[in-house]
Amino acid sequence: MKAAIKKLVKMPLFLPIFSMLLVMAVNIIHDASIGAPIFGFFSLSIKNNILYGRIIDILNRGSETAILAIGMTLVVSASAGTDISVGSVMSLAGGMCCMLLAGFGNTNVSEYVTPLWVGIAAGILVACLCGAFNGFLVSYLNIQPMVATLILFSAGRAIGLLLCNSSIVYVRVPSFQFFGGYCWIFPTPILIAGICIAAMALVLKFTALGTYVQSVGINKNAARIAGYQSKRIIFTAFVICGLCAGIAGIVATSRIYSADTNNIGLNLELDAILAVALGGNSLGGGKFRFSGSIIGAYTIQAITTTLYALGISSAQAPVFKAVVVILIVLIQAPVVRAYFAKHNIKGIATSPKEAVQS
Image (cartoon, rainbow, N blue to C red; front, side, top):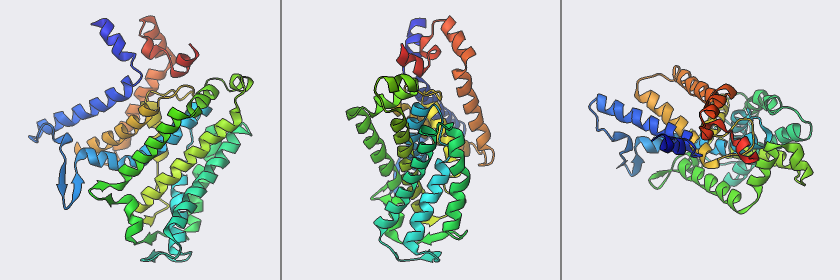
């Protein structure tokens, strides 16, 4: 029995899968306690030609976090730091897109001033430029990632407000609302997130990007001596993170068919970082598990949805998220790892970075 537990704990995705199963168990117990169907959490239905269900809500509302987690995983692995500007970059990308579609000076339109593809491309391009700016500061100027991205964390949302003249810009055109609405019976954000996840999975599978990122994250100087372009790899990771923030910003903007630059992406950078950590990845860089980050992103949304189902207000929900963060930090703490190492539980005792080095 003890050997089986050790083998289970050693599984790379043990932490994210266990967390997701724990959230599901809480929902099952809650439904049983109130007399609802025990497996109501998994039930799906179609009403007014739209697919409904708690799982669909989690996948839908967690789409932006999942997209952000893609880029955040690469940034954390390559730079051993985090990009705390992704929420503000989302806001800026959405603001740029809506202002081009509505025309500067307009705040409520029912037809495009510029083509839809131009607005979307401009928003994503701005986000990529923000990622390039962050990447340049980190890779070429050797500024600590959190400090470097703090600039756009503060300024990105302010620039978005300036673009929108401190107003909410509404774009009430069905083709724009499609990206945050529905494609047939499925929520479009789920499909967009799925495409982004599949694209990155293919890139990691058929290119050496994952190897480059992990090698630089383990030891930047050793990777450089081995022939890797360490600075360029870190720079690329931040550009990809900016790209993901831009896509998430378009989805979030389309969802509410407006550029509310004060609230779009607010605090989502924290969820993206938590998703990476909850996915079993070390925030100290090195080896990463892409699938773990995605599971972590949807687990966070499942936790939020569960808290609301339990009657906990949105103002109190961050307290419970903080508890999750504390548990993750404790698991990754050197003292805790030393304890597990003493008891030969290597799956927890060994960090992702150490696993690659060994």
